[in-house]
Length: 116
Image (cartoon, rainbow, N blue to C red; front, top):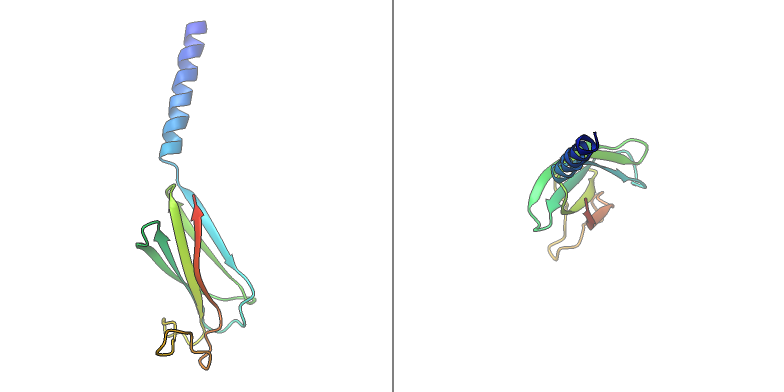
């Protein structure tokens, strides 16, 4: 009986360790304080090497946007986003690289780094 409990415990621990190795997470990003509900939020989700894994566009409601990314494997990630009011899927910039504030693109976030 004791030998059987030990075997069960070992199998249980191995299965938990295996599940944690292959575990995946869900990331919820909530962006608040947008200037208005016009347009969309464009988000780029990158791995630690800066490789774009997914690009998402999401509509705005109540001056906020909630983006859910499923099946994220453990690792280091970054994301960046901006409020694309004119819906041209481009961050409008002056020739010197600053956002063109004459065009309605007020909200830009460069990068957020985190670990899953």
